[in-house]
Structure formats: structure tokens, C-alpha cells
Length: 351
Image (cartoon, rainbow, N blue to C red; front, side, top):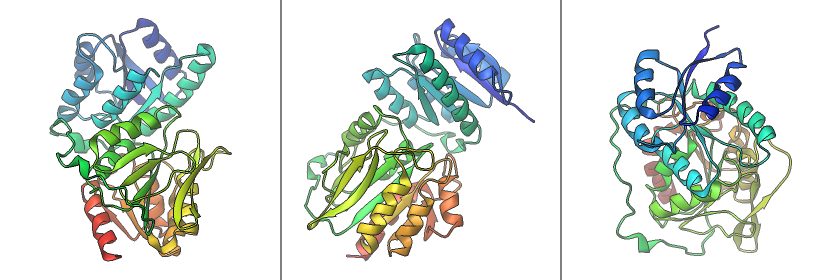
């Protein structure tokens, strides 16, 4: 069996040693080298040709964001960020995902001994997923500064609940969601999103999207109403469901057992949309590993909702969209760059 060749880039010798030992304990992973900064790492990438990088993004000389934006257009390679849980660490981790990283694993902040064990288990899993990721679309990409349009003040929060858009994503989903949401006008129906992401990161993700989108984006709280021009993102470690309260739709965020190995679960969200919104809903399944969301999307379709999926070529990991497509849950698949336009088209058709 061919092993997954991993290169570690981290400015801490202690962290490099911990990562190397923890990854090497898995017989399917081979650590081919470790680098103290991105300049050494760049040369090692060329010489060693690893399958996956682990990357610390807060480093001297050149940070991980700038490195990713230089690396990915020239040498696309799956990258898993290993980041701190500080507020700055969360923010720049999201920047790293926008710049080409496939996924991230937070460094433990408390109970380090137990935290390291859990971190290494998560990192080994995500490296295996990353090794299957399609990052070829980053080749020759130009990184332009993202700016909110001058007419941002036209964000609409009309209290209409005629329609609801439900979106689910996992690995590679933060970048896919960013592309979709930032391409939508502020007059779109309310949107509810489950992105598999740990607690603490979803608010940072929502705040970041709110800065660059024409719709209002926030981390969901129980009782939040779904309204035109608003996007609600399920909080990490909480399931989110849609309910009808009088003449309005709102969300409920709650704990509970993991579903399909996840909390929040896309399936739970989409089953609730199928039950309470039915044919006035639109469902979208984006890149991700596993099958979470496929059954829920099929329930939405059977309830009369229009359903879309991301196609294989544009998916970082064609897992969730594939399962949904294979079981007949998806009306039609589209490249990521075409999804927003087709959502707009579908909404306009059902007015």
C-alpha cells in the first residue's frame, strides 16, 4: 500500500517533533521531512514532492497566508493548517482556507496532554481526506483583495419567509460557501447553512462572510428569524433545525448526539426544512467527505424543493455531493462558479 507522504512546516522544533511522531504512528502515513519556515519548506516541496503539507500559519519571515498565495498558483498541493485557537488564529485560519488550504486542526489550548492526543487523531484523519482532495483549480489563480461592493448598504432584511435556501458542506466548504454567498444579491431568500466546523470557528467564519457579502451573515442563535437578505450559520457543536412559528420561519440550535458523525449535521437541518418549508425551499449540497446531507436533501426533493449539487470537477472532495447525486437527491449538478447564478435563476422562476 502506498503511504501518504507528508511534509511538516512549523517554526517550533517541539511542535515539529510532536507532529512527526504522532503522524508516523499511523502506518498509512510517512513523514518525509519537516521545515522550520516556509523558505526551507518551499525547497523541500520541490525536492521531496509530498502528497500533503501541514502548515503553521503564524511564522516569522513569511506567514502562512502569503506562502499559500504564492504556492498554490504554482504548485497546488493539499494543505492542512495546524493553528492556534486565539481570536487572531481563528481569523487567519479562515484566510488560509480562502487561500487554498483544504482543512485545519486547532492546536490545544488547555489540557494539553489530552488535547494533543485528540489533535493527532483529528490530524491523521484530515490528512487522509486531504490526500484525496482535488486542488488543481488553484493552478495559476490570482489572489485579489476581496472588497465588498460599494452598494453594501442595500442589504435587505425584509421579513418575508416565503422561501428558504438550505446549504450543507464539509471539507473545502468554507471556500465554496464564500464563493456562493458573496455572489448573491441582498434580495435573496433567507439562507441556513451547516458547515462542519468546530465550536469557536463558526462565529469567526460568519463575521468574515458578513464583511464581504451583500447579505447579512451571522452565527445562528435559537429564535433567529429566517428573512430575505440574511444568512444563518449553524454554531459549531450544535445542531440547527428550521421550524415554523406563526407566519415566520426561525431556527432552533440545540445539542444532542452526533448524526453521521457530525454536530451540526446537514441531514438534521435538511430534514427539518423538508418538513416545515417543503416546496418553498431550495437545497444545495457542496464539497465534503462522507454522506451527511444526502438523505436530508432527498427528503427536501421529495417534499417538492428544488435541489442542486456541486459537480465533481469543482469539488475539493466529491463525497457528499456524489452520494446525494447517486441516490437521486440532486436535480442537477453545477460547477461551483455557476451555482449562485442558478440559485438566482431558480428563485426568480418560483416567484
